[in-house]
Amino acid sequence: MLRKKYITGKVEFEALKGIDLTVERNEFVSIMGPSGSGKSTLMNIMGCLDVPTTGDYLFDGINIRTLSSNALAEIRNQKVGFVFQSFNLLPYASAFENVEIPLLFAGMKGKARRERVVELLASVGLADKMANKPTEMSGGEMQRVAIARALANKPNLILADEPTGNLDSLSGGEIIKLFIELWEEGHTIIIITHDSNIARQTKRTILLKDGRIDDGNGNGHSAK
Amino acid sequence: MRDFRKQKKRMTLTILAIAWGSISIMLLLAFGEGLKSQMLNNQRGLGEGISIMWGGQSSIPFQGLGKGRPIRFTSDDVEYLQRRMPELRHVAGEYTAWGTNIKYKDKIFSERVTGVYPCYEEIRTHYPVSGGRFINNLDMEQKRRVVFLGDETKTKLFGDEDAVGKQVLINSIPFMVIGVMQKKNQMSMYNGPDAACASIPATTFAAIYGYQYFSLMIYQPKDISNSAAIETRVYEVMGAKHKFDPKDERALSIWDVAQEAREFSNIMMGIQIFLGLIGGMSLLIAGVGVANIMYVSIKERTREIGIKMAVGAKRKYILIQFLMESLSITAVGGFFGMSLSYILTEAFKRIPIQSDVLDFMGRPTVSTEIGLIVVAVLGVIGFVSGIFPAAKAASVNPVESLRYE
Image 1: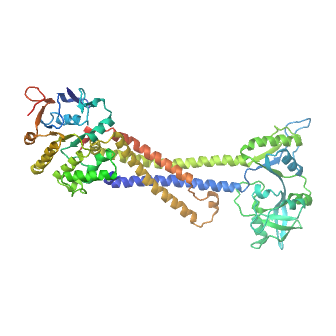
Image 2: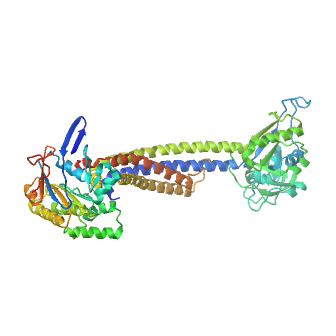
């Protein structure tokens, strides 16, 4: 039972009001729900960026409540890859430098690191745009850079928060194709989306409403 | 750091402020250093580590003798003090005759003539210009009629002419000039400047003028750090010979030049600290500027901090990143400031101006010590102005900062 309360000033807001959810390794899950339903909060907790107010979240069998902020940072670095709606690339850094950042935090050294960056950017089809800055790329290209960055340290979990929200349908479709390929390669993928077309391409859809999982019966394990 | 690219103008201004602060602290310290070394140099004109002693009057009855007896020194006292106090390196006495006529060819001047000991060369810095010499032991033993001229006296008598080897008449008695004193800055003096004086061997002086008593005595301890204890001992030893109470402070009066030099060096230290503080203030203000730019920069880069945390940056990394930024700003500004100050002081040293003001003020000097002090102050300011903003950056909540626009 996960609960998350936000206290901003005198206002207390409960974003998650009791969530029970298990995601298996190599699942392909989408989370849907209207805005304010707690999707992003749930994703932040699953990505170890945030901790629940009450309840336990087990990541790879480890209760993240017991971990220090350094250990959480390490999990985010090694085992989780984030993809955001607004890409969240560093604007002044090139595609190459953006992808390099998680490898720097992982302590990877010189030549191996550069080779890994080249390999990652090639795998998302951006071998020729490595020196480009975000402002010199299209939305689809920026999202590919973000995916390459998310994959940098070979994480088992990819979390995508409306990854196609800022893209046209064509490049959005390509991004979803990329996620399907990654799932087929063995990654666990969780996509937050508004778009039921995208949800339909995943193997399981979870509906969130008002901080709770909504499947009509109150059962969180809705399978498709 | 590539993160600097964003705010060039503000960065440049802050670096300028740091450079300006470094220049002011550096130049003020350099000025203090120049002043100090010049002052010490001027002080050395009288002599280093010496004490000058005059006879007074006894003021306490002692061993059945009444008070009010004058205490006066003879050449016996020099020998006696040397024998009784091996902790003294040099002991000397000085006879003084005011208004003595010195004549060379048709020029006659009335000058002060002193009868001195050979050790004056060292303890009273009577160094001869090359080609001449000072009075030596043989001159003393043989009571030679030789004279060592102060540089001003020499110029008055001889002008540009070479004086060494020439004869002058002192009160109509011929003396041979054996040396001329090197020009020196003399800040403190008794009786008058050494430059306007003529010195002859003390023995010769006594023989010619029939003086029995020295006008003063000078001693130089081997270890000048303990001059107060030596002074007490001198009172005891002289008291035993001249029969006065060693606690009778009016029997002798002693000018402890070494002690004065120490006090003076403390005053100079105080002045330097004061100058350093003034310079430090302006650097501190620049440090506030650095802290300010760091706070603004963190606000603007909240999202960047969030992104970095999302991909696995530990809080320590964020802390170090911002700390390094503020240290780099201070390092760059400090480097410019210090280089410029160094160039300025070196340039000032090379300007060939001679003036009496400079003889007293000295010229600004940058020492290694000053460099290290400024670097240390810069380091502290860079660290302090960076650590608080950096700690703030590292405590940012990653979820909120990712939402931050």
